[in-house]
Length: 559
Ligand code: COA
Image (cartoon, rainbow, N blue to C red; front, side, top):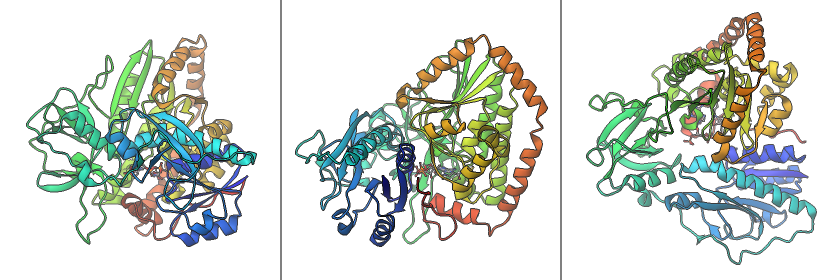
C-alpha cells in the first residue's frame, strides 16, 4: 500500500513507524502537519491508500478524514482520551498501559478502534517510555491496524468501554508544582518524570525561575528540604523531606517577549553559583547494582566487562566524551576478553552536544573541541586490540552516535531501535572515523546512499545492510540481561582468542590517522564559517524552532 504519514514532527515514533512500514513492503511518504493546507496538498499529491498519524498535536482537516481512512495513534489504552495521556499515567504511577490506533473523526480520540496493544510503564521518565515501551506497543498496533485495513474485511470497533479514564485535560504546570517543604522523594521524582523531557517542572532555584528536567532518587544524601546538597556528572542534587533527588538539566524560564531558552546540564546552567555545593562522584566500578544515579558505570560479570552510559537526549559534550574515555580506559585495564559498551535504556548516543555548543561563548571552537573529544573516544574503541568490543544499543542512535557504535567489533541493537546514520540534517560532513567504519560495514555505495538520503533505518533493515550484526528482540527491561547472556556466551567461545588476534593483525595494517584528518579538515571549515548552515540549523534545533531555511525533512522515495 502507499501510506501517507502525517505528523506534527518527524519524531522518534514517526521515524520508527516509517521505517517499519517500509520494512513491511509499503511505500511511505511523510507530511508534517504544519497547517491544514499542506496536509490537504499532500493527500492530493500522494493519493494514499491510507493516512496514518503517529504523532499529531492538531486535528486533521474534516475534508481529509471524511474522504480517506485516517488512523490516529493515541498513546493510551482504549477509552483514554486527551492531549496529556502519558503525563497523567506517569504522574499517577500507572504500571500497565497501552496504545490505541483509532479512526479520525470529529471528536478528539473518540473514533472507532482499529487496533490496540498493551505495554508496561516502568518507573522512568515520560519521553524514555515514549521512545521505548510505548513505541513498541505503537509499532505493534500500527502494523496490526494496517494489516486489518489492507484485508478489506475488518470493521473497526466503536469505543463503548475501555480501561482508560475518558477525556482528561491538558496537564498544566499548576499540577506539576513541587512543594519542597512537604513532598517526599517519591512524589518529587514522579512529578519530574511526568514532565520529562518536556515541558519540565517550573520551579524556583537560587532566586530564579527554572524548568527542572529529569529526576532520579538519591538514597543516601539528605539536607534541608529544597537545599542543594551535591553535584555529580553535571546534575544537581536537591534535598526533599525524606532524602534527595538528582536533577540533570535546567532551562531558564523564558522572559516575556524574550528569546527562546534551552536546556543545559544543571551545573552549566548554574555556573559560578555552586561553589558551596560539594561534588559527590559515584564510584565507576560497581560491585552490585548500586542504586545511586550516575551517567557512567562499570561492572563485571563472568569475565565480561560492561561499560554503561546514559546521556540525556543521547548528547555528549566535550566533558562527557572525556569522562567516558577515561572510563573506557579503565575498562580496558581490567582482565576481561569481551567489553560491552552501552546497554541500559533509551538513546545510545546522538553525537556532539548541540545545546552545550550553542551556550558556549564561541560555538565554532566548542564544536571543534567536542568533535575532537568524540574522535578520541572512537579512536580508543577502534584501536582496542586486546579484547573484543561490543556496542549494545538498547535505544536509538544518530549521527556521530551511530559511528561511535560502529567502532566496536560487533554492534547489537534492540529490535525497536531506530538508527540515523547520517549528518546531513545538521548540515555537517561528520567525523568519528565514519569514512573508515561505514563503508567497511556496508560498502561504499550504500554508505553514500545512507549519508545522502538521510533517512531513519530500523534495526532489522540495519542488520540486513550489514550496518549492525545482531537484532535482539526483547522489551527494553530485558535488554541488559539478554546482552549479558549473549556476551558471556561470546566470552566462553574457544575461538575468541584467535578472533582477537586476527582483529589485531587487521588493525596493525590500517593507518586510521588519514581518515580522521580528512574528516576534520571538512569539519573545521564548517565550524569556522559563521555563515555555514550548520550554525543556523543548530540554533533552531536547540530552541525547537523550525529552521528558517536549509535542510528540512524530505519525503522519502516511494518503495
Ligand atoms: N545535542 C543536544 N541535544 C540533542 C541531541 C544533540 N546531538 N540529539 C538529541 N538531542 C535532544 C533533543 O533536543 C531532544 O530534547 P528534548 O527531550 O528536550 O526535546 C531529545 O534529545 C530527544 O531528541 P528528539 O529530537 O526529540 O528525538 P527524536 O527521536 O525525535 O529525534 C534525532 C532523534 C537524533 C534524529 C534528533 O534528535 C537529531 O537529529 N539530533 C541531532 C543529531 C546530530 O546532528 N548530532 C550532531 C552531529 S554528531
